Image 1 (cartoon, rainbow, N blue to C red):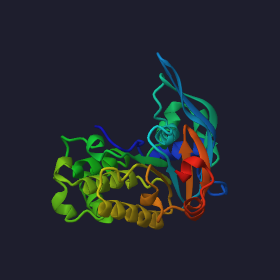
Image 2: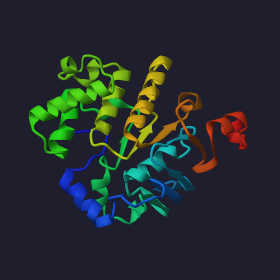
Image 3: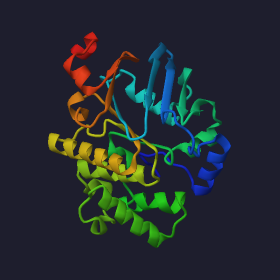
Length: 282
């Protein structure tokens, strides 16, 4: 099925992965995520496009980092690099490290890295209608997370799905299990995507333009929901957006991207009140 989250197979593989790369995390005290000098380029028939040019940042548990930039600034490509979703060719990661709990994801075999998606790091995308499979009910799609990736029974998966839909504040969750994506509003579809991303309890959630095409009231509701869920779980949250106003109230730090580079970082207060880069001022 198509899915807006990227997942792994089950607890046995999680345990194997943690043993292999030391992700038990009991004595790890560094940043949850550390990106250093990351560069991504796309090699096209018309030349090389430098999408990401040596960016660096960190993310701690319970922290919200907003990556702010216009379309084409490289913010979404940088997130795809973290998730291992850069198609090669034409895309190539040409430098840098991406460390999760001190382990460089870029040095992992793809088979191991694939197992980290969903359980350790999950991502939701801006177009929920495209990401969700139109031929399956939302209850079936959320339940599949538990059936396939956790090995629970059909009845238990249904129970967990209802609980998760309630948790992300989808009204009448039990009655809506059999509804299809097109039967939900844009805001409710985004809540479904959030539910699917949280099903495997990731340590990091990356939300790429999670409120695009939603009205202002619904945007605020989605941001409040993400903030509330973060408080409950302690996960690190990366919000990718072009609109500072959407994320200002929920972000601990901002990283402003322009032309593939991070040109400014700081608190919302510092950047909003006294930007130091011409792009941010504009």
